[in-house]
Image 1 (spheres, rainbow, N blue to C red):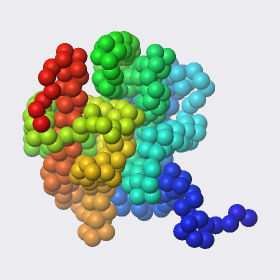
Image 2 (cartoon, one colour):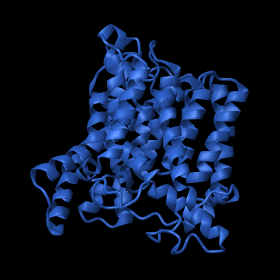
Image 3 (cartoon, rainbow, N blue to C red):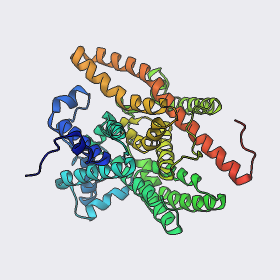
Image 4 (tube, rainbow, N blue to C red):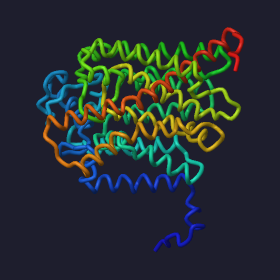
Length: 412
């Protein structure tokens, strides 16, 4: 029988990465085995696990049976229309269908946590605890519970970032291929190509960026008809994400809300950049892999924030931000960006837990009113986070422009 650690010294032999994985395993076990916790945190499962992977497999089965997956799908228990590209129908060609949902959804979840562990790589026990707070945050657990295919996008992009830790032509080609695949599967990952702005010298940045974006853009063009057919409803309630949320709540129609959101974020990004409230990526202590991950996560979150209203599981890409923010918090850098990220990740879940424990069941009109009030109170935090990320990307582009055209550095 394996002996358990009997002292703090023996426990420390496990190492921060192992402690992180044990914390995640314990947290996921509690989440899976304690349904009352999921309900108290506002994550009703509609009677099934991995409901989003099931929808993808049901659409693939519909194609195999000669049905149109972009119309009401009788093979899905919720009759959901397909919301993604036709590339997902390759699952049917591989012999995978609804009967394999637990296998498919479970594989997506396992690969996601493996990729997250490879990205986070905590160096201290405090960092392991912080990484566990991010990996077990309500938006991440929501994506895990539903087995949303954003998990697949995360895995593909994380693999691409791991490959780019050493820059060679072959590795750039692999990254471009993974970005192409992610874009073809779910449209929006094209914006993750912004990580190539970090490359130097400028000629490499421009060449690699142009070729990669052309390849990924071609993938997006090939699935453009699918994007127009896809049903992408704007969710309500809690656990939602997007610049249009606050404007929709204030009565703006969808097109006006999107325009107002874009204009508002542009102004907020300019303000944070002007005030210096952004993350610099050209410091002497910067770690290349953390820079790559931070820019990738920032581009994805800002892009999805602007694109419309989606479920909050988009925030799984905040995992990419954490290594750089954690290093800054552990060193001499400001800690508020890390605290702000944790607040954005945990606010909705803690609200639901407090409301269910302290207030209890509410009638629907009262529930909707309380949720509306919560969004009005929480959106400033979300906007502050997105403005910080957008300002950081703006500074990154400024540095790239300076290095490419030899512009005099901005005075400090």
